[in-house]
Amino acid sequence: MANNNIDPKLKLFSLDSNRPLAESMANEMGIKLSQAKIGHFSDGEINVNIEESVRGDNVYIVQSTSNPVNDNLMELLIMIDALKRASAQTINVVIPYYGYARQDRKTHAREPITSKLVADMLQTAGIDRVVTLDLHAAQIQGFFNVPVDHLMGAPLFAGYFHDEGFGSDSVVVSPDHGGVVRARAVADSLKAPIAIIDKRRPKANVAKVMNIIGDVKGKSCLMVDDIVDTAGTLTLGAKALMDAGAKEVYACATHPVLSGPAIDRIKNSPIKKLVVTDSIQLPAEKKIDNISQISVAPLLANAITRIDKNEPVSPLFKQRFIDSKEI
Image (cartoon, rainbow, N blue to C red; front, side, top):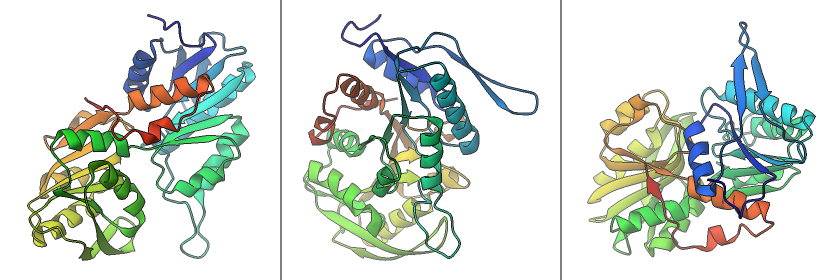
């Protein structure tokens, strides 16, 4: 049923990466997903057909640029071009998981900064705004010359683990120095102390734990990260925490990339439960017993509604807890 409080010129489209999330967002907003058909030619080229008028509309496209990242990115670019040529008033991309975000700077000679390249491609295609969630590096917002609404998963995780009994007698752990701000946001909400795992990464997707900064002995530990890819960082960190005397280890990560050996590593790790969001759609084979998924649909739907009404998004950051739905 349509929500009379929603601007009739607002339209929400889903591409192929995460349609269940888009459908949940539409339900939260009280609207129906607008119709578009994504097809492929025999040689693999992507074809987009928008099946309703968008002339003068404020359009939001939901698409995570997750695996297969290049196909999903190309789908998004083609959809933006189609909407621009169909005379949409504004084109707003909702990218719950922003692929290539880890290539945000040069760490070696002759490296690309691919997250900036992706930003340039999206802007060249014709976007007016980006809504995203827990970028790997906050400075990626500066790669865009259009407004970026960068939402945070910390209140969702804080609410979930508060309900699980985590509080001042627990410890929130950052798996590396770069994630301290993210972990502190959860720790502040739970009124819990923080610890840091000092590690060295000799090469991509390989982490070596060196030291734990903080007291974790006899404590329930909650490791907080933005991306769980091969799960090397989380599982090595969990083992180091148990070796340091932790009572138990939980973990949360916004984006469940879960590539390569991730599932086997998590199954065989001391992590009692890994909580992730639905920013990336999980296939059935990755839905194992000690992985729980909570939905970001209410958060994203709330943000879109506020943006469309020219209301501030900042209240979404100030709430101690935001209700999360386990899916």
